[in-house]
Image 1 (tube, rainbow, N blue to C red):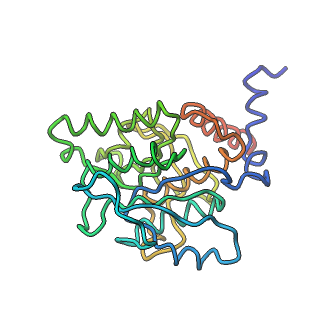
Image 2 (tube, rainbow, N blue to C red):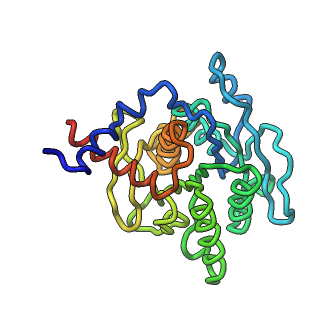
Length: 265
Protein backbone atom coordinates (compact mmCIF):
# COMPACT_ATOMS: atom_id res chain seq x y z
CA UNK A 1 0.00 0.00 0.00
CA UNK A 2 1.27 3.47 -0.89
CA UNK A 3 1.95 5.87 1.93
CA UNK A 4 0.74 9.47 1.76
CA UNK A 5 4.05 10.76 0.37
CA UNK A 6 4.03 8.25 -2.48
CA UNK A 7 0.48 9.30 -3.32
CA UNK A 8 1.49 12.97 -3.40
CA UNK A 9 4.56 12.15 -5.47
CA UNK A 10 2.43 10.24 -7.99
CA UNK A 11 0.43 13.43 -8.62
CA UNK A 12 3.51 15.65 -9.01
CA UNK A 13 4.83 14.38 -12.31
CA UNK A 14 6.39 16.43 -15.12
CA UNK A 15 3.92 15.05 -17.66
CA UNK A 16 0.95 15.98 -15.51
CA UNK A 17 2.11 19.58 -14.98
CA UNK A 18 3.96 20.52 -18.14
CA UNK A 19 1.48 19.02 -20.61
CA UNK A 20 -1.37 20.96 -19.06
CA UNK A 21 -2.48 23.46 -21.77
CA UNK A 22 -2.77 26.16 -19.10
CA UNK A 23 0.94 25.86 -18.17
CA UNK A 24 2.07 28.78 -20.32
CA UNK A 25 3.13 31.36 -17.73
CA UNK A 26 -0.14 33.23 -18.16
CA UNK A 27 -0.72 35.69 -15.31
CA UNK A 28 2.87 35.47 -14.00
CA UNK A 29 5.11 38.57 -13.93
CA UNK A 30 8.83 37.85 -14.31
CA UNK A 31 11.69 40.32 -13.89
CA UNK A 32 15.02 39.73 -15.62
CA UNK A 33 17.65 41.70 -13.68
CA UNK A 34 20.47 41.77 -16.18
CA UNK A 35 21.93 43.82 -19.02
CA UNK A 36 18.66 44.78 -20.68
CA UNK A 37 16.48 43.08 -23.27
CA UNK A 38 16.29 43.84 -27.00
CA UNK A 39 12.52 43.90 -27.35
CA UNK A 40 12.33 44.08 -31.17
CA UNK A 41 14.62 41.05 -31.54
CA UNK A 42 12.39 38.92 -29.33
CA UNK A 43 9.18 40.19 -30.92
CA UNK A 44 10.61 39.18 -34.29
CA UNK A 45 11.60 35.74 -33.04
CA UNK A 46 8.21 35.08 -31.47
CA UNK A 47 6.27 36.54 -34.38
CA UNK A 48 3.04 34.61 -34.76
CA UNK A 49 2.97 33.76 -31.07
CA UNK A 50 1.03 35.83 -28.60
CA UNK A 51 3.55 37.31 -26.18
CA UNK A 52 3.00 40.27 -23.88
CA UNK A 53 4.86 43.50 -24.57
CA UNK A 54 8.12 43.56 -22.61
CA UNK A 55 8.33 46.41 -20.13
CA UNK A 56 11.15 47.60 -17.90
CA UNK A 57 13.57 50.28 -16.79
CA UNK A 58 17.27 51.21 -16.68
CA UNK A 59 18.68 51.37 -13.15
CA UNK A 60 21.56 53.62 -12.14
CA UNK A 61 23.30 54.46 -8.89
CA UNK A 62 22.44 58.16 -8.96
CA UNK A 63 18.67 57.99 -9.37
CA UNK A 64 15.99 56.58 -7.03
CA UNK A 65 13.79 55.65 -10.01
CA UNK A 66 14.80 53.83 -13.19
CA UNK A 67 15.25 55.60 -16.50
CA UNK A 68 12.61 54.76 -19.13
CA UNK A 69 13.01 51.48 -20.98
CA UNK A 70 12.99 52.00 -24.75
CA UNK A 71 13.30 48.36 -25.74
CA UNK A 72 17.08 48.29 -25.99
CA UNK A 73 19.85 46.34 -24.27
CA UNK A 74 23.25 47.25 -22.90
CA UNK A 75 24.79 43.88 -23.90
CA UNK A 76 23.31 40.71 -25.49
CA UNK A 77 23.39 38.71 -22.21
CA UNK A 78 19.98 39.78 -20.90
CA UNK A 79 18.25 39.11 -24.22
CA UNK A 80 19.45 35.49 -24.18
CA UNK A 81 18.12 35.12 -20.62
CA UNK A 82 14.73 36.64 -21.53
CA UNK A 83 14.48 34.45 -24.63
CA UNK A 84 14.91 31.29 -22.54
CA UNK A 85 12.08 32.29 -20.22
CA UNK A 86 9.77 33.16 -23.13
CA UNK A 87 10.65 29.91 -24.91
CA UNK A 88 9.49 27.90 -21.91
CA UNK A 89 6.69 30.19 -20.68
CA UNK A 90 5.64 32.44 -23.59
CA UNK A 91 2.67 34.06 -21.83
CA UNK A 92 4.55 35.60 -18.89
CA UNK A 93 4.61 39.35 -18.44
CA UNK A 94 8.32 40.08 -18.75
CA UNK A 95 10.07 43.07 -17.16
CA UNK A 96 13.62 44.04 -18.07
CA UNK A 97 15.66 45.60 -15.26
CA UNK A 98 18.85 46.82 -16.93
CA UNK A 99 21.42 47.22 -14.13
CA UNK A 100 24.36 47.89 -16.45
CA UNK A 101 22.99 50.78 -18.48
CA UNK A 102 25.20 53.50 -19.98
CA UNK A 103 27.99 52.92 -17.44
CA UNK A 104 28.56 49.37 -18.73
CA UNK A 105 29.18 47.96 -15.26
CA UNK A 106 27.03 46.83 -12.38
CA UNK A 107 27.19 47.75 -8.70
CA UNK A 108 25.62 45.76 -5.88
CA UNK A 109 23.55 48.76 -4.76
CA UNK A 110 21.99 49.02 -8.24
CA UNK A 111 21.04 45.32 -8.21
CA UNK A 112 19.45 45.77 -4.77
CA UNK A 113 17.49 48.78 -6.04
CA UNK A 114 16.22 46.73 -9.00
CA UNK A 115 15.15 43.85 -6.72
CA UNK A 116 13.03 46.17 -4.57
CA UNK A 117 11.54 47.86 -7.63
CA UNK A 118 10.62 44.50 -9.20
CA UNK A 119 8.91 43.45 -5.97
CA UNK A 120 7.20 46.65 -4.85
CA UNK A 121 6.43 48.49 -8.09
CA UNK A 122 6.22 45.89 -10.85
CA UNK A 123 4.74 43.30 -8.42
CA UNK A 124 6.75 40.48 -9.99
CA UNK A 125 6.30 36.94 -8.72
CA UNK A 126 9.58 35.70 -10.23
CA UNK A 127 12.98 37.44 -10.32
CA UNK A 128 15.82 36.00 -12.39
CA UNK A 129 19.40 36.94 -11.50
CA UNK A 130 21.77 35.45 -14.07
CA UNK A 131 24.57 37.50 -12.63
CA UNK A 132 26.79 37.05 -9.63
CA UNK A 133 28.81 39.19 -7.29
CA UNK A 134 32.12 37.72 -6.05
CA UNK A 135 32.51 37.58 -2.29
CA UNK A 136 35.32 40.15 -2.26
CA UNK A 137 33.03 42.75 -3.85
CA UNK A 138 30.62 42.49 -0.92
CA UNK A 139 33.00 44.26 1.42
CA UNK A 140 32.58 45.97 3.81
CA UNK A 141 30.18 43.56 5.46
CA UNK A 142 27.19 45.93 5.42
CA UNK A 143 26.99 45.57 1.59
CA UNK A 144 26.53 41.83 2.00
CA UNK A 145 23.91 42.38 4.70
CA UNK A 146 21.97 44.80 2.47
CA UNK A 147 22.05 42.28 -0.37
CA UNK A 148 20.85 39.49 1.90
CA UNK A 149 18.05 41.69 3.27
CA UNK A 150 16.80 42.32 -0.27
CA UNK A 151 16.72 38.57 -0.99
CA UNK A 152 14.99 37.87 2.32
CA UNK A 153 12.52 40.67 1.60
CA UNK A 154 11.57 38.91 -1.62
CA UNK A 155 11.13 35.62 0.23
CA UNK A 156 8.78 37.10 2.83
CA UNK A 157 6.69 38.69 0.07
CA UNK A 158 6.36 35.32 -1.67
CA UNK A 159 8.60 36.32 -4.59
CA UNK A 160 10.69 33.55 -6.13
CA UNK A 161 14.30 34.58 -6.81
CA UNK A 162 16.34 32.37 -9.14
CA UNK A 163 20.09 32.97 -8.94
CA UNK A 164 22.85 31.53 -11.12
CA UNK A 165 25.78 29.86 -9.40
CA UNK A 166 29.31 30.85 -10.37
CA UNK A 167 30.43 29.04 -13.53
CA UNK A 168 33.41 27.70 -11.58
CA UNK A 169 31.18 26.30 -8.84
CA UNK A 170 32.04 24.80 -6.36
CA UNK A 171 35.47 26.43 -6.41
CA UNK A 172 34.23 30.02 -6.35
CA UNK A 173 31.44 31.45 -4.21
CA UNK A 174 29.16 33.95 -5.88
CA UNK A 175 26.27 35.95 -4.48
CA UNK A 176 23.31 36.00 -4.29
CA UNK A 177 23.29 32.27 -5.19
CA UNK A 178 25.20 31.46 -2.00
CA UNK A 179 22.43 33.10 0.05
CA UNK A 180 20.29 29.94 -0.22
CA UNK A 181 17.80 28.94 1.21
CA UNK A 182 15.69 32.16 0.76
CA UNK A 183 16.18 31.82 -3.00
CA UNK A 184 16.50 29.05 -5.59
CA UNK A 185 20.14 28.60 -6.61
CA UNK A 186 20.93 27.03 -9.97
CA UNK A 187 24.01 25.36 -11.44
CA UNK A 188 24.42 24.34 -15.09
CA UNK A 189 23.91 20.89 -16.61
CA UNK A 190 23.07 19.48 -20.04
CA UNK A 191 19.73 17.76 -20.51
CA UNK A 192 18.00 16.23 -23.53
CA UNK A 193 14.83 18.16 -22.70
CA UNK A 194 14.99 21.81 -21.53
CA UNK A 195 12.18 21.01 -19.08
CA UNK A 196 14.44 18.54 -17.29
CA UNK A 197 16.39 19.54 -14.19
CA UNK A 198 18.00 17.98 -11.13
CA UNK A 199 18.05 18.52 -7.41
CA UNK A 200 21.70 18.15 -6.47
CA UNK A 201 22.83 19.99 -3.34
CA UNK A 202 26.48 21.02 -3.59
CA UNK A 203 28.01 23.76 -1.49
CA UNK A 204 24.73 25.69 -1.00
CA UNK A 205 23.65 25.34 -4.65
CA UNK A 206 20.55 23.17 -4.84
CA UNK A 207 19.45 22.69 -8.47
CA UNK A 208 20.88 22.04 -11.91
CA UNK A 209 19.03 23.09 -15.06
CA UNK A 210 19.74 23.12 -18.78
CA UNK A 211 22.80 25.27 -19.41
CA UNK A 212 22.40 26.25 -23.06
CA UNK A 213 20.40 29.08 -24.61
CA UNK A 214 18.76 29.59 -28.00
CA UNK A 215 19.52 33.17 -29.05
CA UNK A 216 22.65 35.29 -28.90
CA UNK A 217 26.40 34.99 -29.56
CA UNK A 218 27.21 32.87 -26.50
CA UNK A 219 23.96 30.95 -26.12
CA UNK A 220 25.45 27.55 -26.97
CA UNK A 221 28.29 27.91 -24.48
CA UNK A 222 27.18 26.02 -21.32
CA UNK A 223 26.68 28.53 -18.53
CA UNK A 224 24.81 28.97 -15.28
CA UNK A 225 23.43 32.20 -16.77
CA UNK A 226 21.28 30.07 -19.08
CA UNK A 227 20.45 27.46 -16.44
CA UNK A 228 18.78 29.90 -14.03
CA UNK A 229 16.16 31.16 -16.53
CA UNK A 230 15.38 27.59 -17.56
CA UNK A 231 14.33 26.82 -14.00
CA UNK A 232 12.61 30.22 -13.69
CA UNK A 233 10.62 29.43 -16.85
CA UNK A 234 9.65 26.03 -15.46
CA UNK A 235 8.48 27.71 -12.25
CA UNK A 236 6.45 30.24 -14.26
CA UNK A 237 4.64 27.36 -15.97
CA UNK A 238 3.80 25.86 -12.59
CA UNK A 239 2.70 29.24 -11.23
CA UNK A 240 0.25 29.68 -14.10
CA UNK A 241 -1.54 26.64 -12.65
CA UNK A 242 -1.18 27.68 -8.98
CA UNK A 243 -0.21 31.36 -8.76
CA UNK A 244 -0.16 31.73 -4.97
CA UNK A 245 2.67 29.28 -4.30
CA UNK A 246 5.23 30.40 -1.72
CA UNK A 247 8.98 30.03 -2.37
CA UNK A 248 9.35 27.04 -0.04
CA UNK A 249 6.35 25.38 -1.72
CA UNK A 250 7.89 25.86 -5.15
CA UNK A 251 11.17 24.35 -3.95
CA UNK A 252 9.27 21.36 -2.59
CA UNK A 253 7.38 20.90 -5.87
CA UNK A 254 10.59 21.10 -7.90
CA UNK A 255 12.21 18.60 -5.55
CA UNK A 256 9.30 16.16 -5.89
CA UNK A 257 9.13 16.62 -9.67
CA UNK A 258 12.77 15.64 -9.95
CA UNK A 259 12.30 12.55 -7.79
CA UNK A 260 9.08 11.66 -9.56
CA UNK A 261 10.79 11.77 -12.97
CA UNK A 262 13.60 9.54 -11.65
CA UNK A 263 11.16 7.00 -10.21
CA UNK A 264 9.31 6.71 -13.51
CA UNK A 265 12.44 5.82 -15.50
